[in-house]
Amino acid sequence: MDTGLVWLLVAVAVIALISFFAVRAHKAKVRDLATLSPERLALHEQCVAADKALREEERKHQSEVARAQRELRAAQKVPTLATLQTHSVTPLEVNMKGHRHPMSANVAAQVDSTGDVTGFLASRSTVTRMATGAVLFGGAGAIAGGVAKKQSIKTLDTRELFVMVVGDGWAEVVKVPAQQGESARQFAASVNSAAVDFPRFSADHTAKVQAAESLLAQVQGDTALLEEAKRAREVLGPDPLQELRAARKSSDVGQGEIGA
Image (cartoon, rainbow, N blue to C red):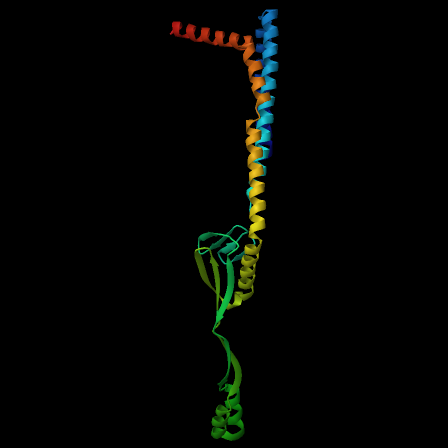
């Protein structure tokens, strides 16, 4: 049998089973409601309405709290300005070699280099030159061809870069490959720029976080409508329908124990 058809039959069976129990529960509820007096039936309807109003107020309050929490997380978020290997810098901290240092207006970074790129002539005998000399001039030609070595310019790169960052009571130095010189200079520039901008960013960031924290506390404490809905439900007391079902269940349990 096709797998898709099997899943379709299973889904139909599940839906049919759910529908059966839903109809059965509805019929049982109708029978139970018919046994209530008009006064207790009216009280049941009031309890249902009060329960619905309470759930709605709980939903609204939880939604407002969740929104305020999202705003707080957004206010706390700090962007990464630059990265270099495993090191990073944000407007509020410098993370180097696994150490997190606070940013301040006194933080400074620079890139230093040692070594140089040296050029030199390299020569080597080639098979082609030696063979050509041998053909033209014999053995002596081969020797002459070998002496006439091919020359080329080679370079020796001994450069080393060091990124140094100094702050209030701390300093970090990391070695960077010469090929990453541009990234190293960009990282240092980002550190220096963040240090210059630190007083402004820090003040703005602190103000935004405090405002978001204040809003969250206000929303969490604003439970007047929720408490009012709770009191309105408590005044009504137990739901007559729930009492009826609880009494029936207790009676069924008692009869079962007697029969046992």
